Every structure is written in structure tokens, then in C-alpha cells.
Amino acid sequence: MSNPVVERLISALNSHDLDAVSSCFGPDFSSEWPAHPGRDFQGPEQVRRNWEMIFKMSPDITIAMTNSVEAGDEVWGEWHYTKAAGQDLRGVVIVTVRDGLIRRSRFYMEPIDAAGAAVPGGPRLARD
Image 1: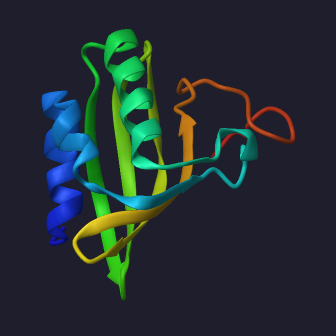
Image 2: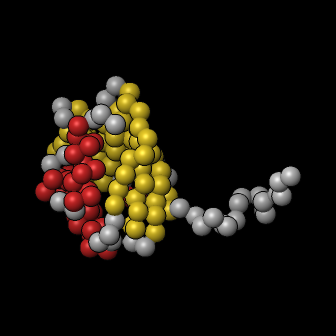
């Protein structure tokens, strides 16, 4: 990963440094959750409030971006949140960066299922 503001964000999140987290976002920031539109919000102040709550609820949380691709002003990353309120989350977050600040994010994050979790369509078929 080579995007400096996204690298700063990950470092700030793992340090639980709210001021550093907030400084990564532009004043026009918007957060979108296409699968959960009720979670959408605007502004870096809400980013700070959200992460303040997350750090209190999940004092051991760590964040990693395991893979990423940059296309123009977007960074498409596979993220892994460990120990997020007692569970791990994985998914894709698409971040738009302009003028050295994060202006938009689209979250596609979900809790990780246990290894033996049911699959859509019924039980798994035996493999030969």
C-alpha cells in the first residue's frame, strides 16, 4: 500500500489516536454503507465519535489492510478488523482521497463466520 493518508489512518486507528484519525478526513467527508444505508453519515466529527465509541467498546481492536489497489483517487482495500466488539470483521472499503485527505468511503464489511457456519442452499456437499 502506498497511499500516505490511508497509511496514516491505519497507524492512527491502531494507536487509538482520535486526533490523528480525525486529521485524515476532509471537511466534506461522506461515509456510505451500500448494504446498510442507515449507517451513512457526513463529516469528520462523526468519524471521531464513531471511533471513540469503537475504542471504548473494543479496547483491543486492531486494523489491517491485507490487500489494496489504487485507481485514480480511489484506494480499494481488503480490511481486517480484529477484536471488534468481540468479533472479527473483514471486507472491502473503497476510499476516495483528494488533496491528501479522505473525502469518501464506501464500506462492505461483515463479521467473519465460524468455520462450520451454514452455507446458503443447505449443507455442504462432501468432497471426494
